[in-house]
Length: 362
Image 1: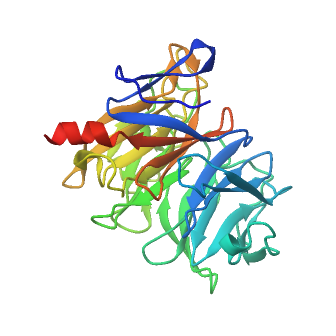
Image 2: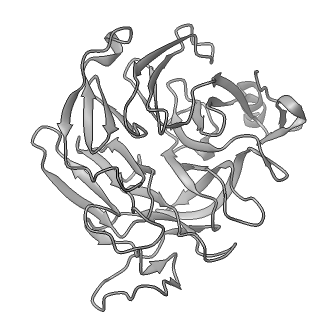
């Protein structure tokens, strides 16, 4: 199945369902049948690594002829416990597994026969309590790991509900942000180096509250409200906020239940100028709402370190039918973007029609 750009900005998939793409953009199927995939990371040589959740697999995908479709796939690991979070740094692939982080050395030269993974960090909370997690290396070369809450709403012990920065050589860690519920999408602004992250609001307060959040770290160790305050002004009835706790309210509020699971700044040059250095968010979509929202890729327009507006780039929702559930969105080597789909196990490639861009500039 290949999805292509149509002049009407609508893209048709199988079974007469529709994916809507902003005019000028196209969407193609990069890879399929990958199971319950979650987060992605990119190697120095362009290898796309994909983690999973319950299936316990990590794949490496290679587009050797650079035609926008994977032609070689490698199973890097199987039988792992929730290896959904991945990061790549200095030739090595980092993977969360059980209550630890493991590393595959020189992985891009060993795709056929990966060496035995080495444990580099062992202080993650146990997986006997389900919680979200994600990883990314920061500008300071430390490994940033988000550790979500183990519940819908509760006061959980540290390091739950935080983002840690870990020195993988010494094992030393520092809490960068506190009071988070479920963060799997975060990235640093290419212009300011400030850390931005998306946080999912709690469930079971109704269709329209509380808001999902976009936050920015100005001061390390700041608290972002969970479980005491949701969004900017929804007070949690079950827990009283400590009197001396200073809460940082969201930089931008998304509609409730859109579930912003992936977040990346666009660093490429293929998209038009107005998309560059802007935030792209994968909204995984609602599951506990009377009518569905989310299921799309949106761009957040930033000016002077503030979010001005949110606009849809790709919608995977056809009426009340989700064609896909985008989980992660990351930059591709050629200036396009990869989108993982944890509903059908697909990876899509979002690209811009260069002919259309040339017409716009004339």
